[in-house]
Amino acid sequence: MIEIRWHGRGGQGAKTAALLLADAAFATGLYVQGFPEYGPERMGAPITAYNRLDSKPIRVHSNIYSPDIVVIVDESLIGPVDVTAGLKSTGSVIVNTDRPPAAVREMFAGCTGAVYAIDANEISTRALGRALPNTPLLAAVARLSGIMPEDEFIRNMRDSFMHKFSSKPEVIEGNMNAIKEAWKGAVLL
Amino acid sequence: MSKRDRLSGNEAVATAIRQIDPDVIAAFPITPSTEIPQYISSFKAEGLIGTEFVTVESEHSAMSACIGASAAGARAMTATSSAGMALMYELLYVAASDRLPIVMAAVNRALSGPININADHSDSMGARDSGWIQIYSENAQEAYDNMLMAHRIAEHPDVMLPVMICQDGFITSHAVENVVIEDDSFVKGFVGEYRPEKYLLNPDEPLGVGPYSVSIFYMEIKRQQFEAMSKARAVIAQVSADFTAQTGREYGMLEKYRMDGAELAILIMSSAAGTGKDAVDILRAKGVKAGLVKLRVFRPFPAEDVAEALGGLKALGIMDRSDGFSACGGPLGAEVRAALYGKADGIRTINYIYGLGGRDMRTEDFEHIFGELAAMRDGGEAPDCRYQGVRE
Image 1 (cartoon, rainbow over the protein chains, first blue to last red):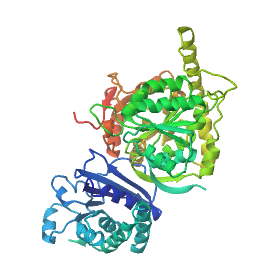
Image 2: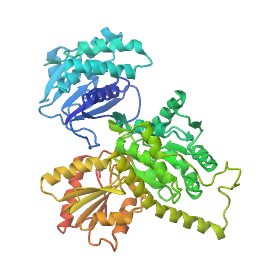
Image 3: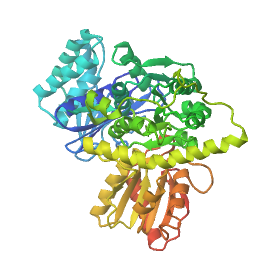
Image 4: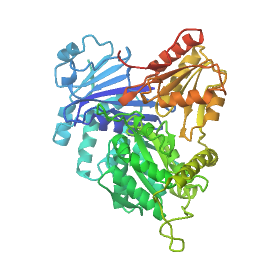
């Protein structure tokens, strides 16, 4: 089982990303869970979302305390929230940041897992015209989790976007460009 | 042909409601059940259902509208949670005593205070004596399946009682999981047409529903409710067996998980049962004789099945996701202990209160509980009731 924990702020799409990842993984035949942890619902408040992906049915219904992958949608959460809490020693962190590698390494000085950096805001601004970091991060997670090859992921995401954005098809191509660019955009530090 | 899908618990229940296509739905939005009327509203707008969707101004009115519709002869449904269900309490008793087979999608959420939107069972436990049948679901699949069985149980001539299908707010209502969805035509065939024996809109047989009942009649009405609830046991078993035969998915009054040779077990309802099963597997791998019983049907209370399932255990943890503030445990604790008395004596029990207001329940919590049960089995002292996962 692969367990993924997303840290974002209300309005940044962490929950949507977790649900889209569940969608994409489901399409490969896996058993999936995608769920947010709900607190007070406000724009900008720290929120957590989760994914479990497995080849057999998933029964556990708790939050995730020992993730294989932690995704940090908003780097301002590092510090106020213990984002790497419980991360497996073989696990990975994916952080959305535009800082230089040395500065990012500094932020995760005590972290035993692998740290990947990706400038998801920049990718989405170029592809979509504004900073919607969740879809580029989704591509980075899909690659690092190894749940499916690139072409299959891109195909599945097109289906998911067409479903999710059926009322605003103009954003589908932008999102597709964002995930294509982001597939290899996460850099191991 | 059934279809493999991935849906949240609310989406799964809304899908069942679309397939059932009831005559009337009256609902008022409240977190975490709000999505259900939202989906129904979309289905209605898209012409996918012929349902009369009544947007009322409160839950009191929602249940009142369901009562009126059901008394008129319609198949009526609603959805609610927490304070919304509490606002219905008065009418829940009316629906049951008027013998109206209304079906409710209940998405369990804590009652205030402090105000909280997350899962526990205090809302439906507050309605436990209202005369409604209560069925609890572990995951989105069970919430969907239980919804497909609800009308057959409610509308059975031996029963004619309202049914609430419960699932845990957010934990399953907002979690996307794998779900098998049956064909629309299968659902229509399985659920069947509702043909009430007596109804208000029948000009050939004028009828009064819900009149004042003086002392010389009131108790007979209650005795008939008791009779109907007693007979519901056999009807639930029969409908569940038919569902299992047609879908391969097994349902009974309760589910026994690794109870063969178990010395220690927990009894639990809804989403945390799945987490408990994982904990039982972990403990069995370490040689601990652990098992789990998941209670699916809480009303009517299957006392004989409970005593049979638990007989032979040395120690039992009874898991309540609400506190009745009796100061000696929760509602499940009281009823399970009563079921064991004289039928399966000698089992030492601890009644755990857990998961209030959405407090997370992890496999580690269950391992801790089984540790306490083992200590009690080995002669250790233990309290009758204990809070699990609380800072104190």
